[in-house]
Each structure stands twice: as structure tokens, then as C-alpha cells.
Length: 271
Ligand SMILES: [Fe+2]
Image (cartoon, rainbow, N blue to C red; front, side):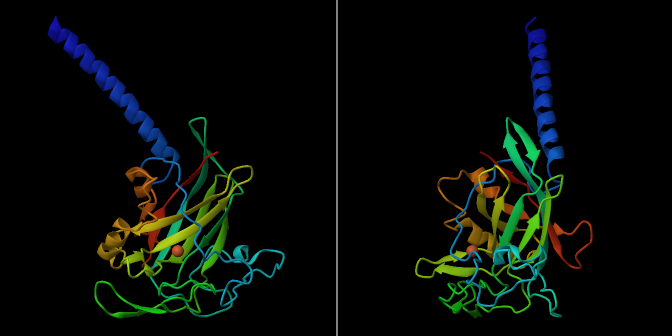
């Protein structure tokens, strides 16, 4: 009798587990092919001092002729070159694709018409911003080699993507350089991308996403920086929330970027 009971509870247990698995699979199906496994709400990260407001850039970049747009919204979603210039940005090319979703009543609703602004440093770890003038060169904390925080005249620095009907967005950019935040403390910001996401009727989200992937140059070093970055490892975020901000990049499955890498990330907004 006892054995039968055990068998029954085991069956129930299996049934429950399968149910849970089904839910996870459903969540995955609603989201991305790879990258983000669990749909956590996207945690906020600081805006930082280098958002491209009008008057801030050292080199003005305005691809759109529409001067009614703020400069932050005047460029397209491909940061690897500037329209009208022949050169290409330095650095490893990555594409980032995904959706903007609103988490409401345990459902994820795709947000169409959401405006995403991306801004990031050059391959040399320098922003196109007048405020970014400290430590134009620094010694690499591992190799001791002098690093120039150089601007890149062919890098677009910031761009805008507006989500389609299904909430999809995409960006093409480069892996930015790491840069010193506080040399005395031994704090160097890992390569990261800044985002501001504005969807009608939803509180604005400002965050930063980080990098990992075997094919990213200096990935081991980048993971060391990720491990001790004070902003990513904010004590208010639990480990899962922190890890959720690190995007894995792999060889571009669609082959759209020669030698490039692709990552997927769904921004999950909330009220
Ligand atoms: Fe930054």
C-alpha cells in the first residue's frame, strides 16, 4: 500500500514538474532564441554622465536632416559607420536584437512604437561627450601597456531604434573599450552599452547591458571586470538580476554580419 502511495505521489510530482517545465518552455517561446533564459524584469542602471544631449558631443553627429529631433534621436540604429563617410568604426562588430515587452498581470505584452536610444564608448573607451575628458590615457591594469582613450571619427556613438508592431528592435554597434572609473580604487568599467527606453504610457527605463562570449576579444579579462564592477554588482540587485544584464554574444546565426557576433535581449518593462 505504501509503495502504491509513493508511486502515486511520485506521479503527481512528475506531473507538477512537467507543468512547471511547460511554463518555462512557454516563456522561452514568447521570448528569444538564446541569451535570456528567464524573463526577469530588466533592472535599471545609472544614466551616467555621457548621455548625448544637444551641445554635449565633441564631434556633432546628426544623420537625420530633421533638426526638430534632439541630437540623441537624430541617428539610425547602425553605429558602425556614419552616413556619408567611407570609413568603418574600429572594434568588434556586434548586433543586438530583441523585443521591448511590458510585464503586466503575469503576461508579457510586446510594445510597439517604443523608442530606444543606445549610446556607448568607442573601441578606445571614450565617449563623444565634452564631459569625458579625464584620463585620456591610462595603464592597462593587467599588461601595464599605455592605453589611449581615442575617439573614432567613423564611429556613430549613439543611435535610435523604434520597435515594430511585434515589439522588435535591433542595433549594430561595436564592443566598446573598458575605461577607468576610479584608478586608485582599481575600478575599471567593463565594456557596456547604455540604453534609454521610452514606451508610451510606461515609465521610462534607463539601463546598461554587459558582454560575455567565447568569441569576444579579451573575454576572460572582461569577465573579471564584470565580476567586480560596482554598478553591475549593485547590492540592491540579486545575482539573477545582475546576470540578466550580461548578454551572451555568439557567431551571428543569420550570417548577416561578416565576422560579427549577435546577441539577443528582451527589455522587460514594468509599472
Ligand atoms: Fe558608460
